[in-house]
Amino acid sequence: MKKITFTHVSVVALASLTAFTGMKTYFLNADMNEIQIAVDSIEIPKIANDDDLANFFSTYIAATGYKPTTLKTPEQISESNKSTLEQPSPTNDRVYGNINAPFLLIHYSDFECPYCGQGFPELLDFVDSSGGNVALVFKHTLGHGQRSLYLSTLTECAYEQKGNYGFFEVAKFIFDSQRSGGFSTPIAQLASSYSLDETAFQSCVNSNSSNAKILFDTQEAIGLNFDRTPSTIVSYQEKAVPLQGAVPLNEIKAVMGQLTQVN
Image (cartoon, rainbow, N blue to C red; front, top):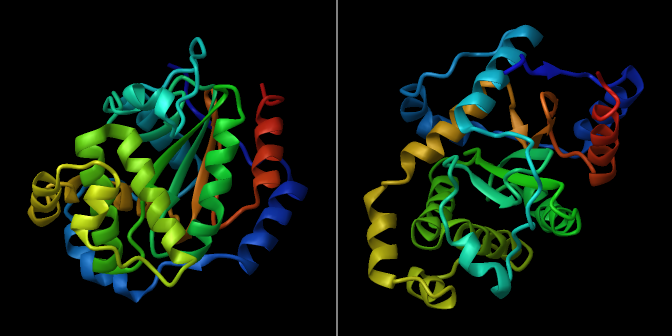
């Protein structure tokens, strides 16, 4: 596989992105120290420059097996696609949409981050309307210590039973709860609402069995020098642009368009 090329699109485009993220960004706060010891046990190199970034992403793409191959019908959170979405992702990532889509939005997000919650439904709608051309890859980024870890754990335990379908159902519910006073749903009620086995769900939450995946994602974000949420890598074939902080969907689309023009 060819080396991934990180593209800074254009000076004008980057300047506008930087200006926006400076105004509307959620920085990782001091609570992250609560999980730093566990995160530090996962070895992912710190990224120092653009070459390191390109090498890291090239390795990441090879390891997860992403390839822009023949398009398939996009997966959505709907009953008609439920059986497909319940299958675990072959990459061990949480993928919404066609895993073989030419465009990937690798999205580093925190369930306690208000801007993450605001933009999440729009990203899902964008994938749904893309005709299989765009997929969203969700990456946990723990910006609020144990509270973030708990909410991420709920989504991972839903994934354990119902694959990507369960993961994104619960993720959407948690983000939706932000707009109505915050998430406070008891585990038994959450399990019942999404047809999860309550005993297995509670056992998964108590066991911390999903911590390795969650902490790996978080350390990956740290290694990429993402210090705010949400942050997104826009990937097209073997090219990618990292966008730090909250970026409006129209800006993401503009970057996607420019990536198709880069040789």
